[in-house]
Length: 63
Image (cartoon, rainbow, N blue to C red):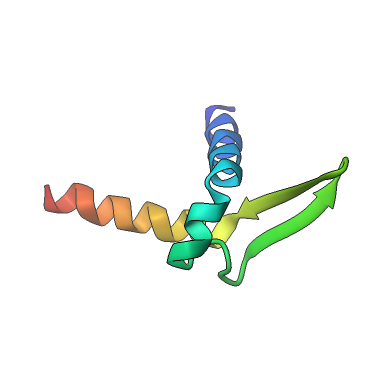
């Protein structure tokens, strides 16, 4: 249950930061989904989440 909450919060954060992430190339990777529901555009960044997780893990190992 905790991981589901973390994933939902991460998706919400990615939705808020979508404009900034597009400038650096995240959010347009294969596996990142965009769809319209309820009059809003939603963004589910599966691949970008994995890339950022791997980068943060590498940073954590180096520190």
